[in-house]
Image (tube, rainbow, N blue to C red; front, side, top):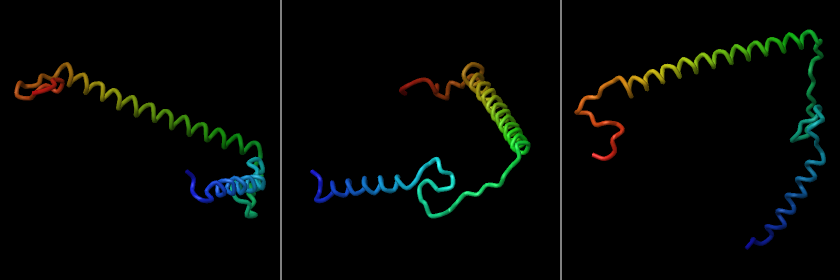
Length: 105
């Protein structure tokens, strides 16, 4: 059961949200989306050549980052696989050490 006036609070919140959303638009880049306090975003004009240079530099950085990530993951993966192979198939545990795959005592 709802408390006294809680439904009215919900309706009031919906009305405030509608009013707030009517004053903003995500497509107007001169206004901030959540609060219209008069701040305007001013961006400098850039030539198409500079934009292509920036785009190329960003793409090169992404490619280098991707290569580093793949190299690190492949090295770590190969080390882990080698370690697992050694522990599971090559190393002979002494009889004093219980088997790690044996359940119970």
